[in-house]
Image 1 (cartoon, rainbow, N blue to C red):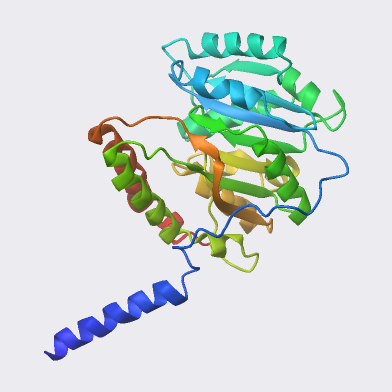
Image 2 (cartoon, rainbow, N blue to C red; image 1 turned 135 degrees about the horizontal axis):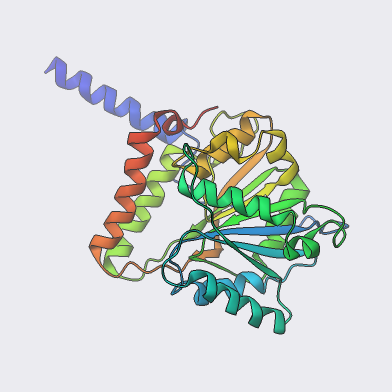
Length: 310
């Protein structure tokens, strides 16, 4: 009985810690604040989209990204990362149509073979960053057209759908609060029965590992981001050594946040309904594979990132 009493006391203490001292991870209050006015001058932004075998997904997502209602210069660079389904061709066709409709310029980059020591997605991101400096997209997204690199990089995924004013809100929040990284966890699909059961548990798991409120505190040592939506200050990224510093990271979003926060930059992570995942998981097997792969990567390969501290 004494052993059982001790075990119960330890469990109670653990739950008390989670409830009181773990950043309120179960709350949904960390969202972009409204109001506060707009920047006097909207800075340039270039979005970088790594894409591998996403020809079926791009028609549902890329047009909305290209059509962002953003007052400043904006362009998109899509990196075709060794696709075998015509991803690059599909993106180029969508870019031509967007240009006719007055959308943002699109540059499609053919990805190069991955060097030793680089994780696949980080290598695609790095190629997109390099291409953004010389792309037609950058000519539109520079501080003044053609005069310099855009102030912000927007890292997003090929399966992410953007509401028309989502980018405007991200940039306003970054400028208003001097944040080098503003990230939002995309709203995941929860339409099928299995999605409604498993997806909320996955979000809860992520928030327990990286409590958003602690991430957002400049005094907190926890750092994290959500890879589908990361607005990053180009100068802050360069100052921290660039993506090469996280070249082998399997959890690129958390690694990027840690890199920037370790360098003294202010970061923010929250929830949103303006940025959504369009990828369906119609079967339990496909959904479970996505969840298990992400959780396994967090727990098995990155014990330092699991702590989430710098």
